[in-house]
Length: 345
Image (tube, rainbow, N blue to C red; front, side):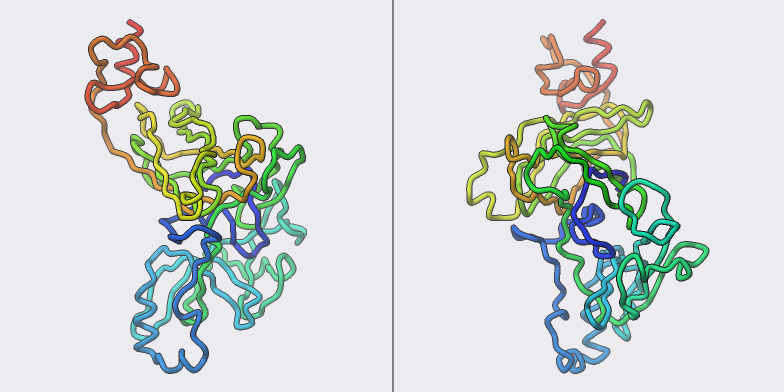
């Protein structure tokens, strides 16, 4: 994740945080996308009956890279972490914590400004920012632990949700930063509406020629109005998709988890940076809470040379949003500077 307009949250909890977009689908039902593991429902007696062998079998269900919450015995404090390994013989799990930050003076991170990394001892409990201590951070800044399976819980609600419902609101909201400066925000919906009220930007691991973008939404389905791609050569954002909110979805569609992959204009350059813009407004959007569970990008390391179909007189016929971004190829609807140059010439 590289930038976000706003999000609902209360650190160190990462519920509704844009970090929840990382990885695949966390849920399959409409609603809050609460992720829970089977062992969370077990009492002490049931856990003891599992023994090391049973714990190891349950731990094997976790995947390396999966997000989990490491919680205190009291349950009041939980820290977001990613799984780095599973010690199968004993059912212990190795973790790397997502870093936490606060102001150098010890106050809470509440928007853009200077930050310093801190860490919380989950077993000591306490609250943020008071118990997020600078002294607990090693020189590397990387915090690891190996913990019993029973101390792990699902990270849900595992969705990104903007801080405000409905709108557009003509007020500035400020917050974020507890998980890093890229999440600090200062945002006024009215300054950007229309066409959108909120946004999130992210980077994928490898730059590709983007061919499709799929989004999972458990609530407020259809609120995405724009998908953009950044050209690394000049830093400009280009439109892959633009459209009005899909307010005409049936009741049956909004009562189930929704996977959406719109037709997108295929770019002539590789990129790893994308941006989603959403309309959460009551006027033209939804007015409900709007959640995104995951974003999956499909792409290719190469594309065929572009060519204009016979009789083509303009790039608008190809369905591309920007004439300087895309023109359609003869067969696959690919985009390319060569075809654009051929048309203009």
